[in-house]
Length: 338
Image (cartoon, rainbow, N blue to C red):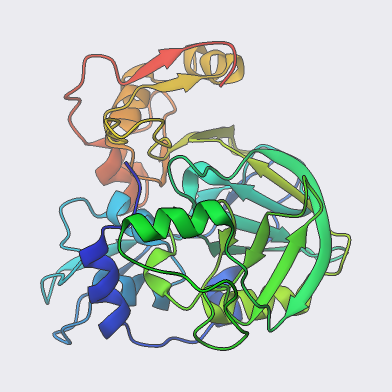
């Protein structure tokens, strides 16, 4: 299940290094309408600095789970110095309208398409924890709030109290506020869902919130300054993305699905396929064996699944994903709707 462990929270929150947002790390040229592939994977050599994996994730604007998907077996607390990590900066755009803000819950990423600009901003996010899920919806930004205060609900205060934490009725604005220094309220429901910052970076790229969408401090500040009130916001859940690119290559990108119960293991939990995904997989040009490998591996990176295309033809990180050994008998389930 995707959630933050208390020990990890304390450790990363204590020793996390600060980072700066750079446009080149978050911005990608927008591909033409018949293409959805953006970015390139890179590598990173872990220095002997004693910092957790979150520090590297923050540097490259990747979520923690995204780093672990791309680099299974890596110690999130203290990655081994000298280890070469894959930075999963290549991705397929979500299969939805390219307008405003698009959040894909399964990949823990936010996409922002600035109006009139031929680019997309991609940022890692934290989302609602099990039992306090961030819902799929189409809504809009109804309010922009600098220096927000936080008034925890009675249910949230009760939940924290079970862990021995007594929350005040209201947390004033400031750097210690769990909502950070910037927030954007969504118009859905009673306005209970917000896109906001955080005072605890360890939760980015994980399921840790009470339903809101949170970003690292520099990321929310940049997004807050770019996004106008009234911007369309669409929240989807697409653990499997796929596409046929203009050059004819067929790609699939698989993320760990969101857990529904405490017992769910996101690495082995069957992924329900849409009718469109089944059609893509059954196409005569798709290598279904490679698809099964990609679904088993769940690397969070695009994998070439065209028949006749060797794994070595793909970028190194993608080739590694293609070469993964299938260990599950049923890596996915079929259904017409997710």
